[in-house]
Image 1: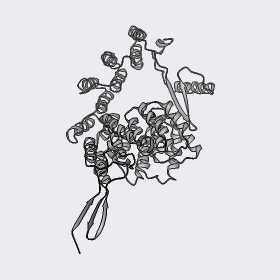
Image 2 (image 1 turned 90 degrees about the vertical axis):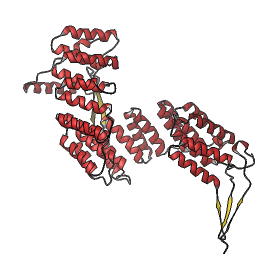
Image 3 (image 1 turned 180 degrees about the vertical axis):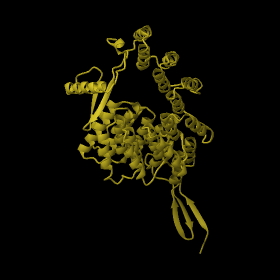
Length: 509
């Protein structure tokens, strides 16, 4: 048997810029190899494309572009998969690849793939959408002769990413056929832009239309429920999930834990966590933070320790949960110890939320000077959450001098926030310093700041009812205020004394 191998290389095709119009782009040179009397064919385009794909998946876009250049110089013709691979790689790194993406677009246009190949056209407009260039994505979309559902979905997602909700809805309405991905793109876009009620309404319409949601849809809907506190719909969706194939999906379970934690149903969250067949670091973080914010300090710290025993290394979110738990329980020494462990042992750089937890820890314990010292020595500029926590503690302790010092920080941070001015004015009023309260009123008026009306909401029968301070427009307003008067009367009988505030200072402002 002859063990020698002979290779015959067929004639090389034109380079892309020399493309023969009569030659199909997917036609590539074939290398015939004879080994042990058995003949096999290796497609060099596939080999080059595979190499380019490996670079793109690893984030080495420059190397991928260099490999593409070598491919063309070698005389190997790229096919539509090659271009899709490059365009998708560029889409993952918008800040680095605008110029490269434009060059590939030019080559694709020269070959006519932007109009005639739906996969290439879709990858091209998706790249521009992720670059934030919906104007260019629209040009590509309009030029395409054939469009698939993926094409329409990419445009909807792109419009939502750019905040152009009106165009996204219009694109959705014009779609010839809508699938689960189409509905999810619209729903998820609403949720990410903060339009949670619109996201839930979109889910209702999806149900009515008969389109079955997938686990990505469910995660988006549960996030929307968590943000508006709609426990009723969340419970219904959980029951729906239990009948689906993805009932054990880790992302769905993590989102359910977050939903129940944020709605105050921590026992439901615990049940979901305990029944999970597989847990991730996100699972542990969700339950730890859930226990902490609901005041279950012992459980939060217990799960924090159990997580490490299970082989999970705590990250910044894990320590946020532990620090929050210590803050709620007034465990100052434990909180400071966790903060040091985070920095020195786990090498986690403290973020502003960690400093915020330490400030809150000292503030709740009445150690306002220690809290202020943390604020003044933070490596980053304090935000309104950190300062607001300390300002609220000042009100509790009646420390107006420190509150006035904090107001300087808050005014520098955002001079247009009304709540901080109102809080300081109420502090002045509480101790009878009406001149100070009046000064705050004049400052607000001079800066054009108006007190925003208070707004609260409650879920009844899977519906949200909103109430604004002083507004009696609700259909059940008469009965509601009658019940409030009855509750107020009962509270006074029990010895409750209403708190005096300076709300009247801002009437008619």
